[in-house]
Image (cartoon, rainbow over the protein chains, first blue to last red):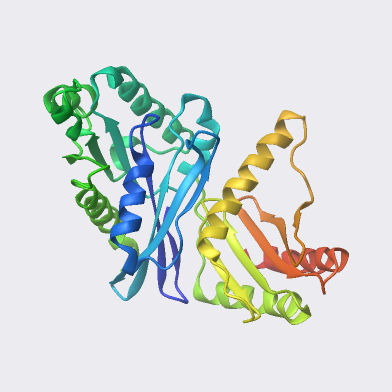
Length: 201
Length: 130
């Protein structure tokens, strides 16, 4: 849950980008880091392994202004997507307030998306959290690949696979090009902050 | 289990006073009281250097989790001394209660033994407030 500091009147909100490996979570954060530079005072932190894959997490903190007299500090995290790093994913999920699930639209990754979402559900359960009760936005990433002739899943298929029961707001995006990256982020921030409003009153 | 430690204004002020007296006044550069989600609860510094405390806290939480997992693999509950020594600055980690960590950044003017003593005293006083 978000940390509220009643003395400084400051709220720290933790938003985690989750999803299968090579799905574009880090690319989302990199785009945000580049395009919202003015609001971001600190450098993006990223812990990578050999081969440029996320080992631990990426971390990007920034201020979004005031709500009900409290200044809101949003902290964006990504998890490492590779299957073997589940312990690290669980670590990053600790205290999460809002989630973005970045699904890979490529035809080949259909199974990976479903497994990663299942893994997210299970990991949330270890913290006694239910995926149905936490602010969540789904992003269908890599929509731009269609133009290059690479087979991608239709949004209908992705919705059926991943969002049939969750009914979370979703965006078709291209993290590389920046399409809907900001929209995804704004949506999850709005949902998360709304869920915290009651606590701030 | 998720944690739900909440602090009121008075608790935060008391904790700040303890950290100021026990650590900052003794020459420590910077102290961060944080939770294992990486949130900064209290941050004090001597004013000499402005570290990026939010990134530090995020990494420290990850680091602490990783080190605890290593301890479990070799059959330890936890490692009692977590300390990174640099040429000029060093970082010391200490668990306060289950989900709280105290991070101390100090330079070579402060000895590790003395620091550990002061950190232990500060933690004892903070535990009484929780």
